[in-house]
Length: 160
Image 1 (cartoon, rainbow, N blue to C red):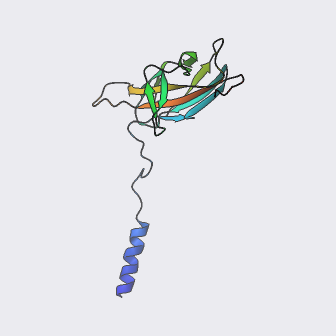
Image 2: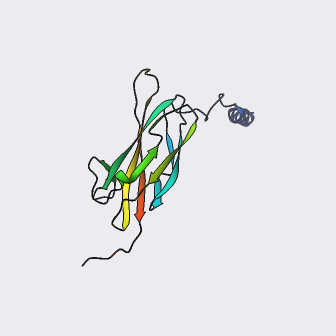
Image 3: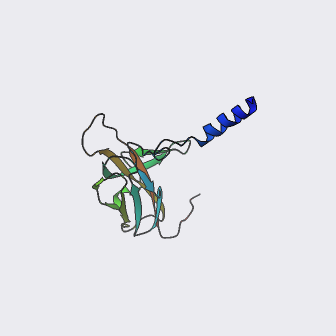
């Protein structure tokens, strides 16, 4: 009798329905970017997909920045990019947009090589910074960086 009662309780617990919407809740704020790294061969274009999985609309500000790696290889945003930076070669469109909840938008990243550029890889960063569309409560900002590598053609000569 006791075994039958325990089996009934166990079966009841397994068959209890989950609350409506369990596991499908959306975050209050979110931004997803694909791809996280863009490689351009010389003068060219690439598209970056930006999605807002959150429940509210956000404004996304787009900016270019320099990139540097610390001694452990972690990337950092720098105000003054180095000589091999491709920051000034990039054009990003659009520069600012409103992304509604659940919506997706495409960003175009284009590079134009200057004359007499040194052959090899040149890096830059495209920063996407969110801010609330309407001020309500505490303002939360999110910043995501997309690494852009521009490969300039030519022969690379090693120096002794």
